[in-house]
Length: 151
Image 1: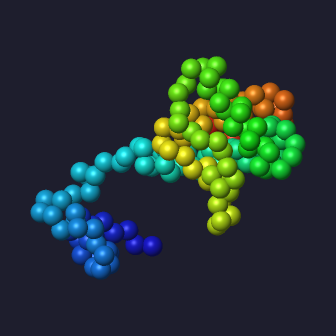
Image 2 (image 1 turned 60 degrees about the horizontal axis):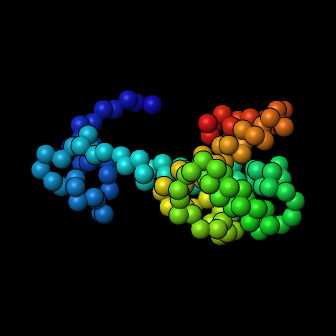
């Protein structure tokens, strides 16, 4: 393995495909350091989809936190629990009722898709549910790790 360091111009010239380059690269005095991450897109509309989806599946399917029944029954009860949680804490949201399609994607992935702000509220609620469930299942390794990650 040979260590190589490139300047921005060298990296662009030697390592990037010349087709479909971002037009920003062609701007005079462009440097990658001027780019800023948008936390709404990387967190609320990115990582949070995965974290919320995995947490809801763990709570509903494995732990039966929202009671027995089909996944549809469970997410109906989960939504009632969510709205009760928000109402008791005076947290406003515009989240419509949960559906299977919001969580289980055709690709097989469990991604809980929601608007950016609603995703944050769902994260708070799921964290509350996970921590509550952990009190009853302290030896459930995945639950303990999920609680640590979500809180």
